Length: 79
Image 1 (cartoon, rainbow, N blue to C red):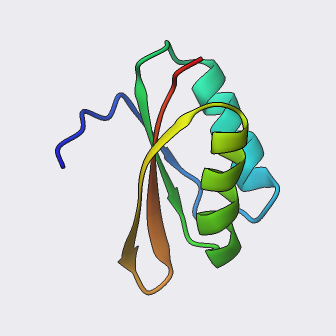
Image 2 (cartoon, rainbow, N blue to C red):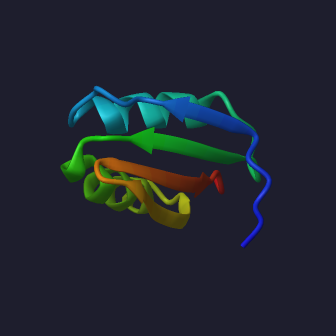
């Protein structure tokens, strides 16, 4: 799947709840329809960030494991 990413947020080294808070703040500065790519290396964040984003009404396009402790979360701002 080829998605155009408008903004990338590298928050490796951060833990919950800061991973969600920083992701949410990054999305707030974006326009509806834009796509945010978030990189996390904290395993609980790979689950909690997508879950929280869906609860906020955003579209989680993908969660991909890129390495031993590295995930990318692709989020489309819908509201």
